[in-house]
Structure formats: structure tokens, C-alpha cells
Length: 67
Image (tube, rainbow, N blue to C red; front, top):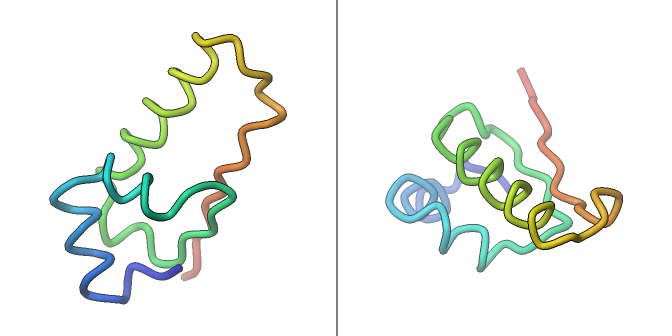
């Protein structure tokens, strides 16, 4: 998915948690630098999964930086 899409970008800006519920892992995000705050939500999700004892290898959230 790309954050060039205005609706996706607006959702990521306004409710990053809902964004990651709608766009579930595995996820490839193009133009994520448009909404850098989503990185904090990604970290929260990974940290929560680790605290719940999920294997880190099963966490498949990917970020793609396209310049």
C-alpha cells in the first residue's frame, strides 16, 4: 500500500492503530516518510506482541523506503 493515497495517509495520520487494523501484516508501506508517526505505532505493535510472548520471527510488518 502507498501513503501517496490521500485516504490511507489521512487514516494513518489520524488513527495509526486503526490503520494497522485495516492494513494487517504482512504489510509493505510505500512513502511511509509522509507519516513518520506511524513508526511509533509499529513499534508499539511489535513491543506488544513480544510482551505477549509471540515469536519475533512471526512478526511480518515490513517497511519499504522509496526515495
